Image 1: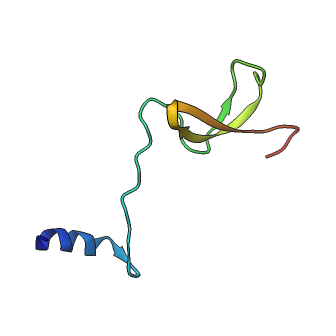
Image 2 (image 1 turned 60 degrees about the vertical axis):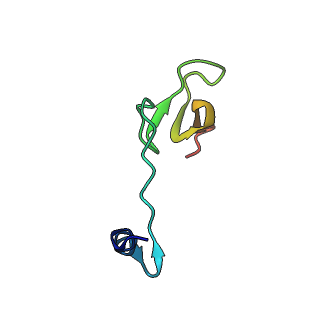
Amino acid sequence: MPDRVIEELRSREKNGIIQLPKKPQPAGSGFSLNERVRVRTGVMRGLFGLYAGQRPRNRVAILMQLLGGQ
């Protein structure tokens, strides 16, 4: 293995564990994690939730605020 690869891995090591780069947020979602969002269509129209990222097949997961919950 080339020395530069080993050096790069060692530069990301913290307490014996190599820190992997953070996965970039998928383009096109337009939302940040934990951003407050309002449902515009469907049976939950008008309710608010928190954007919790995207799942496979570009489904948006929203944690709904129901009955005044956080």
